[in-house]
Image (tube, rainbow, N blue to C red; front, top):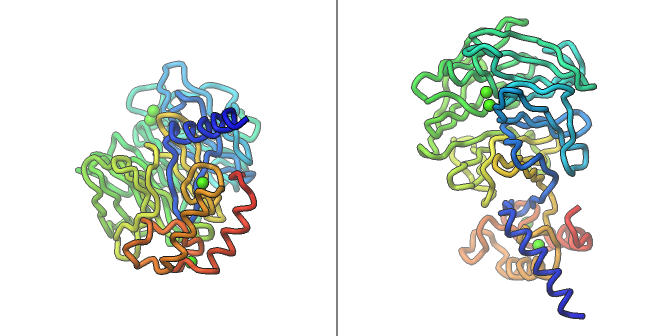
Length: 356
Ligand SMILES: [Ca+2]
Ligand SMILES: [Ca+2]
Ligand SMILES: [Ca+2]
Ligand SMILES: [Ca+2]
């Protein structure tokens, strides 16, 4: 009987390795759902009910359906009733501030004419209306974000511009000339706008649209950004380096504080209101979600392998000790010590066995 059990264990471990699971020490991260392998999620956004919507970089001339991973995770389901051409950018419009339709999904796309862009809204039933464009000032627009006043900003990559809507009129407000153009954009709780650029940097602009900081990650970093409001993970703006596959928080001094490793190539990253992280892998469509902190080796199981890692760290105690494993996975309450407080958290999670 031991042979089948051993085989089953090996298969589970092999599957974990094959998916190149990311690691988020002290927080945990696990498989949550998946889009089709060829979906190429480029932006993701969360619905009020917890659905994960993704824009697709499927540039088929016939268009692509917008899909969502349902609340609680699992395989994606169709959302849009019709195919949409070049639907890279998605942003949930919970209040209907931009679309006029509560709980609608904004979709930023190329127009049917070369050099133009359009923003659609998908109603909760998946039907579609045009909200802006087609306009040259929105040329092939993609990443979108709301500020605290629910004013919409849109990245217009080919124009090397970020556009802000004044009512329904798009007005260019930030020039990204010389950066290679913007990619992923997010607005934090202070209405500061963060945009990743093709030159491998993250640029931060104040609510007055003035450049405040340029954080260079390297020419090949191809980064993505997201803002965490606090809670399950420390509040702040996070950047994923798609060359090193390291996720870092950007601290108040604009320094990168690494928090996770082994991430897949991804541009669709976001946080929910409780500070949980969602990541959609660009190449595979796999969706990861943070959580399951006692899974110290990030294999989806909570077992004796994790306890062994915990026991070693508990004996070392101080995260400043060079012997402590990198990124301190056993410091579950993130206070720089591995002690009885962490053990209390570990024991509760250990009883769950499988990351739920
Ligand atoms: Ca595209
Ligand atoms: Ca596009
Ligand atoms: Ca584990
Ligand atoms: Ca601790």
